[in-house]
Image (tube, rainbow, N blue to C red; front, side, top):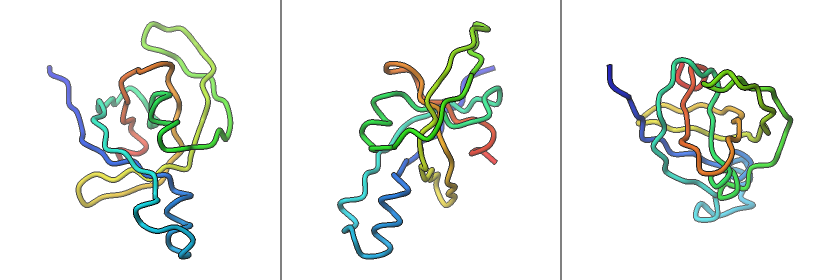
Length: 111
């Protein structure tokens, strides 16, 4: 069985709301293309610290997460973030993984 990746574009949802109200120009909306591992064992969108900083996503909460090696760690929840894939889009919160960890596309945004 192989790994499946999705080419996504992530947007700062707050910036998009400001753009719709004509407070920001479209070129001021923070966004980033990423390649995320599709992970049916994860339920959230998980991004790394660099992506969260580039998008300027505010911390909303903290959540306990179980890692693949069974460790449980507390991670920041940020958002809202718009996730776009081909002709589909959704708005979700994201868990922030430490360092430059590979982004994961979990089942909630995948739906």
